[in-house]
Image (cartoon, rainbow, N blue to C red):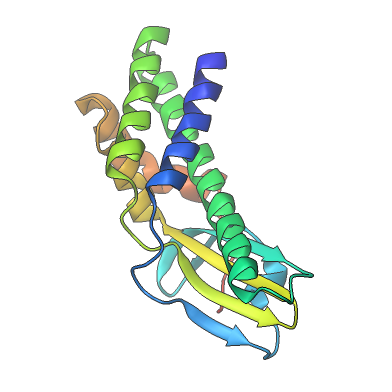
Length: 186
């Protein structure tokens, strides 16, 4: 169990280090009515763009430094989304291990494979999709598409695990993570 926790922690840390945030500029809601996602918070939701993990980050009281406030909110939003991704990854591996009757050494091998894949081939998509600012309050919204999450988890595991993850990933997401009334509007 300790090895699994360490691998999951390393997975999240590797993903955080590997992600860049320069690809596209997120939508900015500056001094306008607070978007719904600010109060809805982090979670797994489905909207017109598909199912995804959403992370919301916010910071208040940094009115003197807009770049610092944005950076902190962005990092918190990424951490929230990546935390959900790490839990999802672990759930997929446990599902596979239970279904296949995997022995502990095989489960550890798969977890180490996940660490390598996220550390080396990270999620390629930009995570921050929207920001909202009002005075000294900065908020950011991060998004990881479920299809990207499944592809990242399935990338460097053995063939049996890959097949299980691709076959059951969406089902597991919907059963254990998707909020029943989860629609996100920016």
